[in-house]
Length: 163
Image 1: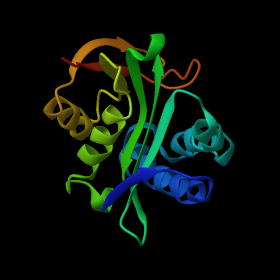
Image 2: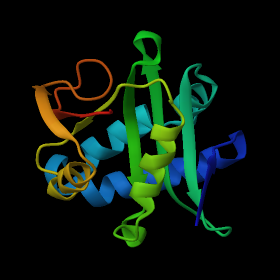
Image 3: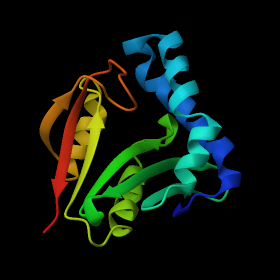
Image 4: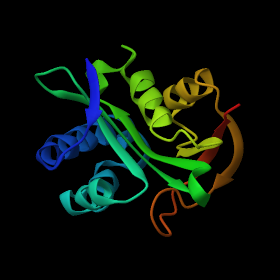
């Protein structure tokens, strides 16, 4: 498994990974229709392409030479001091193999001036919360509008401070 920068040709496979992972993780919480609505909006090829082209951002994939097993996207703010990890997903059948940690390490290494990294996570996603806590993240707050706009989706805000 190697981590590399995502390219335009990866976007359909990344979208497939996101849709698969979201349905596996969130259908039981939000229902199939809501998850489909979210993935069609948040993970469309248009949105993924915009992420790929975003300045002060890093978009990486975990690639085993056959398929993309995971992806991560993050961007920097306040002169590179704060990194927001918007996405870190690993295919359900590849979770627990260290891929998430490899993706997170690559994201962190991509922002050498960063003082902290933040993310939002669904409060009921115990597996993701345990992963992030094991990576040194702590809860610093909550939001009722995870992701884009006024989603109405609650989330914990986690942060890891460097140094």
